[in-house]
Image: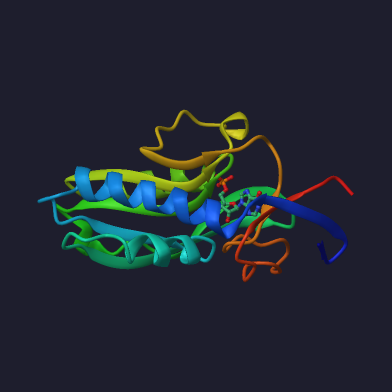
Length: 176
Ligand code: IMP
């Protein structure tokens, strides 16, 4: 499929995605039972993943949205700025941040330093995708849907220059 000037091919079908989300939700339901987790959804990319995941969370939980900007085109700009900051009521709560993809880890590093100042009881990360080879900072991602190589993906909430978020499958740039 051609998006703007690049060609993308399927990496995960919507059925593959559903199986991954089901597995992650089952782990979270088991691990967070009795902990009244507070889910923070990283906008915009994680919105599709978060709504699928949260519909399968069966334990009481809170929900809020946060947003940082960093990505320009196909590469990280390196500068991460909070646009929607972490809400102050995370104090004393067991926070689970929902991310679409951890690439260099810059966004998570910025998020973790911001949230630590607000004294949550605990912080866990659930990311639909992770690119371990691209990671620039040591980071423990508690729940990962799928690890991928240093490749550019799109769909299921992820965009290329503002396009492709609405595609229900996950596509990967095929180099053409
Ligand atoms: P990081 O700060 O480098 O870890 O990048 C995190 C953000 O960059 C993610 O939340 C995505 O919005 C975006 N991103 C990273 N890799 C990709 C990709 O392959 N396709 C689309 N967006 C990406």
